[in-house]
Image (cartoon, rainbow, N blue to C red; front, side, top):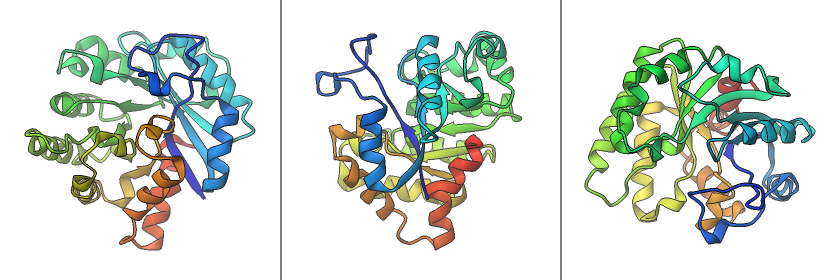
Length: 265
């Protein structure tokens, strides 16, 4: 079994996506997802937010409920600065909401995650996992949040997007290692091929494997953003190739077991 722990859906005719370039500006829906998951042997997925809009979260939950089990869970947006259970209470199919995420990487403030209202909102999230989409300079704040709310489970998205070929790569290594020292943090092996500098990518993946270990890494494609770099079969193939040196049990954990456990799929 393979679980894709990170992918998206969207429709530019329905809402604006400030981060989206023209190459991705077309609808990607449930049937498009089926066309790529089935040939790749992907049995279940986790659908992840793309904009700060509670309406999108509701749409994603409705889509998951209609997916006949393909989309096994949703990581949706809720306002992290407010009472999270109160927002979730008004959602249909809320039982499919497995986590919450805010696009912290778009916040100018590197310490946004340490704001008192954010910490209080995350603390109120109950059994929901918190996905962390952060820049290298926001990793210290992510560590501070995890330390402030040790009872919550956290997922580092895209390995914090290692700054390949840049001067702050060393800072990324240190920040990721510090975050990985917290046992309630796991990391997605996803969203890496669109970063460029592919020749440097194995070094970053080796670091993620070293600090998180195969017991705390989750396979994800970041489809359809990934299509900016590679087609879906190649993303799956090359990500699996990073796991060639693992044991069968370790590979199974990364490809499915860790996601099932983390998101309670």
